[in-house]
Amino acid sequence: MRPRSLDELVGQQHLLAPGSPLRRLVEGDQPMSLLLWGPPGTGKTTIAAVVSHQTNRKFVELSAVTAGVKDVRQVIDGARRDLSRASGAVETVLFIDEVHRFTKAQQDALLPGVENRWVTLVAATTENPFFSVISPLLSRSLLLTLESLTDDDISLLLDRALSDERGLNGEFELAQDARDHLLRMAGGDARRALTYLEAAAGGARAKHDQAVKYEQATDGTPDELPGRAVIDLVTLETAVDRAAVRYDRAGDQHYDVASALIKSIRGSDVDASMHYLARMIEAGEDPRFIARRLVISASEDIGMGDPTALGVAVAAAEAVQLIGMPEARINLAQAVVALALAPKSNAVIVAVDAAIADVKAGKVGPVPPHLRDAHYAGAKKIGHGSSYEYSHNDPRGVVPQQYAPDVIDGTDYYKPTRRGGEAAYADRVAAIRKILRDRK
Image (cartoon, rainbow, N blue to C red; front, side, top):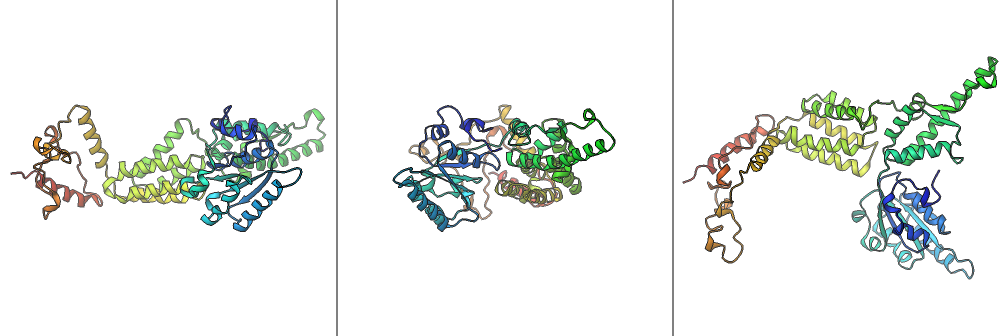
């Protein structure tokens, strides 16, 4: 089912506009190297194949997981020979999947082929190329960023696979609940969606053939025999070994389950929290959405009760980006456990919201003169910074001077609890406020 032309490509419309670099490369047959950056299943390999087929070039694929410098040099040498033929010179498209896995030496080996245009390099990566690809290679390639496919994109691909002679050739019917579940499981990954559809079609074919044999054995007439094989929800679940968690990601239950997860974490019920995390994962929620909710909860519901909670949540979010699903479920689960069991405090969000409310109410006031910028000629003449006292010169590390504008001086926004690690901060903030306000 892989598209054979740019017009068959689903999604990535921002790359396919008339006159776009990708169209110029394919339709103008211009030698140009590409670096394709995007999530799995968004069309990176497909674009490489289209570049090769539509421009009548030889297509060579290497995997950065298994290929070494020797393999790269062999391909480039072969491409040079093909270009130097007395008749029938052939250009080569070299596709390298997961190029971020190449070492610097391996990437360096690509440079002569790219610089001299012996090959048209099409390299794919799921990681930020500015961190994982060497600068010389990056500067010699056109960077194209691919986006996750939408549910409408995936649905179009499913319809094409069901009807196209290269696919299921109109012999199967996909039930709506099975389609909805398939879209959730795909998560914007076309390859995953088609793999699951193919597996489910095998199960549906077996059930259909069994039903036909039964009808024939019971003297069923041709008009009574079952029609197209139906891929229903049960068949799909059996094929991919994943139970359907029935809620609409775009509807109320999407928010209900997300809300239940956060409220369970806030309530310190680690088991309920794990249950709702599992429901969101099995429903096909974007793991980045889950991670973002955990990062917010770490500051909103835990805050200074356990200041390390934010670091745990951020690390989980970074792990989601780095390794993806299904492995990232473990990182999300670790963060959920840590957050659910952490001491809780909402003092941080209460403090910042109270301060914002005062600012919106007009309580801004001028900055005290001794805190104003004094790093310019004439500042001292107008009293800017002249009476500022350097905190590090005091053995306590705190000096009794005014920092807030007059209009909110003495206002306590941060009101720490006595739960968890925040108890120590409560003692410290009380001591600091006493020093700050003990002015002569």
